[in-house]
Amino acid sequence: MSWSGPAKPLAKERWRAGGQRRFKPRSANLLSMTKYGGAIAAWRARRRMDLPSSVAPFILRGVCLLGIDSVMCPTMARKAAWDRLSRDLDRAKLSEITHEIGLDQVIGIAAQILAGQSAAASW
Image (cartoon, rainbow, N blue to C red; front, top):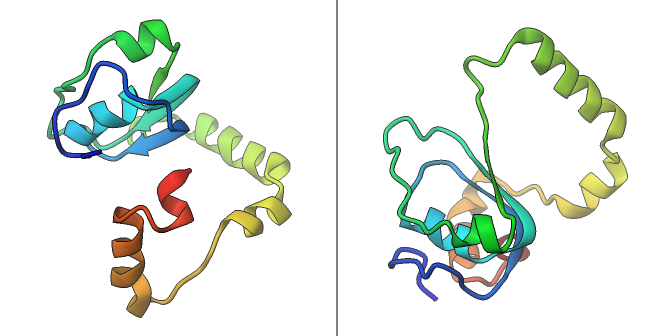
């Protein structure tokens, strides 16, 4: 499977959710592999607004593409989101799924993620 190559309209379902910082060919691949009822969040797409994808994931799998606006979001909505996170986020579960690494480990871990050898590559 190539992340950077052209996307198929639908590929094998792999993820329930995902995120993409900028639209790239990998965004279309991510969409095509999203499981039924899943969602993809996108942010910082101002430089590149095209999305080389099919409507198939949206229509046949009910995938949602969610835009994250960190610039124009009203203060009250931001406060409500942070309040909800502080109330609803299970900190024990959060610590189970996070792993802190040192800056000197970033290159090695990034290589593992890109090679699909890390749990972070399969969420």
